Image (tube, rainbow, N blue to C red; front, side, top):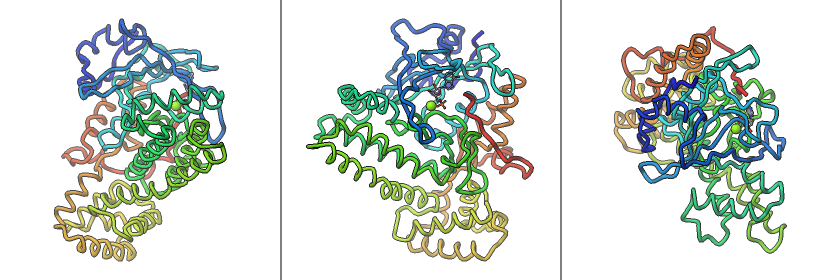
Length: 464
Ligand code: AMP
Ligand code: MG
């Protein structure tokens, strides 16, 4: 009993698909995996992965199906993929299904990330199946997410072939990935090493952007780390309210491996796993030299990430270029925020307001403490040295610092309404608000506010 309950018409259009046709019964059957387009040959993809540090040689699409590829209106090749469409050869003990709450979370958070300018897979549709799917806590409405990605290649895809010592196929996969994501590297001297560097650059940028919006992925396993540099597999993810680098929301992350503040070093760790998988095909006279070459590239991540992070933070602080000491300036602000678990998102809007002459929001957040005054003086001195008009700077800040993020308590409310009463209205409203995260609109204060103090501690689940 497939029904489309959310359809991303704008994305359908971008893909060159007819949204009205997709919204029909035939479209629902297609997006539920009950029928395939005539010329499509759907597949489940194999991959391996390091999960919480431990290696699983065979994961793969256990509840997902790659329907096929499309060339979008800009000429880009995109995967159309169904998540929750039933069992595959990779399902292991699982039922191959997904339930409405987690599917909606992926839709809402993924689309919010897109609107925030963060590279991400996109959500095309949520389809309910009419089935009740058994999960911890009782049966839940079954659902399928139709998602779109620039590819579904993961670090784990390389690990899969490399662990089987299928070096010829690792080489083929490197060529394929380069053709798909980095065609300018096609004639590179050492394609595997160049691919490693390209992934390093994209992922450094991506994680810096996550840090800049307070996003916590929650399951940064190597099978959830893309070659494209898009955020993928929104499971127990969430945005931080009060700033605390140790924040963890996932129910299964007992040791805080994937805490907010650990995300850059985990990415570095994941890149080391990619490097290992590529070792046999890195150009070098012997394995020892290959290891040395690859290690140097992995170790360069820290400095590359730092540059990306400083750029993100400088933009958030109204600084158009990074100068010496700016990283420290940003870091000191974060320390002050952490000391009082000040709301991450509202702080940066309050700073812009302060530049316009309204200090009350900032004072309310930091309880008018002396340290924030001292920091503010340093910051404004640095801004003055850069020479722009304060009002122009404040406007530039407002273009990168959102008013609206997917607030945990509101997402939870929307997921509950959907799962318990099949009421999708709260989800649709959140989606509409988050489509324009940088523009404050009247009547939407509720969506801009931090969770009420009696909400939490917030715990998220994978929904697997
Ligand atoms: P995820 O945490 O969603 O990225 O999934 C990790 C692995 O578990 C992937 O290989 C999934 O395909 C698999 N998986 C998750 N849920 C199910 C399920 N209900 N049935 C079969 N496989 C699943
Ligand atoms: Mg995954």
